Image (cartoon, rainbow, N blue to C red):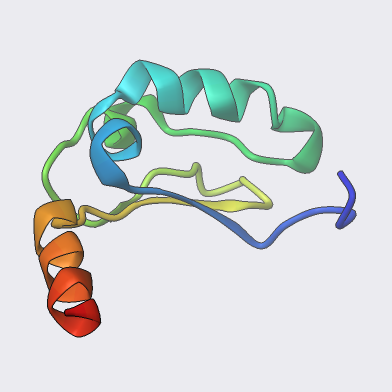
Length: 79
């Protein structure tokens, strides 16, 4: 709302990547932005996917991440 809209919303990490009900709840509260979720696409797990409907004004994505690898890389960088 403060930015007067968004181009895309990305769900990643443990919850964003694996909890389709959470993604649906979040997107249902953002319909005023034109964010509409495709329930069939939202049910797909384990792959990078666009989950917004074709008529959605906001692109919605699920992007899997390897959090453990990211933490390990940052640890190595800091040590």
